[in-house]
Image (cartoon, rainbow, N blue to C red):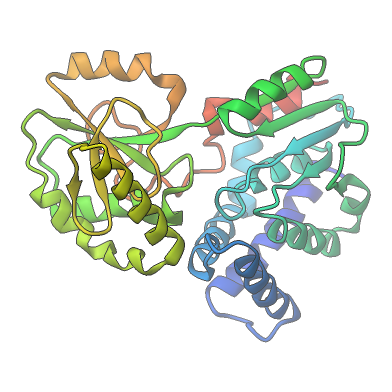
Length: 346
């Protein structure tokens, strides 16, 4: 297969997803199958609500176009290419979180061996089958395994900080990308409008806060008044009606109260002053800053814990509401996956 053929196949998959998300052609065989797959994914994992699965599908529908894919791949060289077997150990914290690695391995011309998370083992295999239906040459290049990985020549693995240590040891003899736990932060300067803070709510609550691009940490000026923040968050109050989220919120609140820890609470979100970045579900950590220079040093020292920084502050990277809408070239942990696949493992 040529690169153009691979781009065309993924863009056709994107077109199918686009028609589905725009409620066009819902009577098609693809759409009917996708409806059942979404239902099964939700039954298997209660965190994967139909609403959030639809959100993930829509993001990929918008990304998988000929223009987006061609622009993404233009800087890389695919000359003198020898396909390798690339194992991908996937996370399963949010729907389709492993699809970028699936796409990257296959569109670069390599062979994909996927070890799926038990939390997300329905959606990607379905899309893989549809991709094969579009371009049958992919059939020999895609393999999923529930057991020990078969022979492979390179690996991309995503997991917690604990599993990353295991991955580093287990895969040390192979070219690899090992991703650890990261979280995202927001810088608030006190001049935000209600609309901007409401968009921030999407960065906090989308996917219940389970993604590495979800904001779990606030940086606010000293003596910041949280009233406007909580007023804006009220738009997301219905999240407490999800039983798993509510259970986590109640549990964390009880633990903090029993320890006499000071909290800010609006009935569905807890704010706790803390220097850590990875907050529990239903909780946001916050930290105050005195000056931009001190804040920059703090963020620089913590860069290995941060996926992205939201806000309109000069030190921010992503606008309010856009944390969970990365471009196709927004690589996890800042590691260029495509450069790894086109240079490092050949």
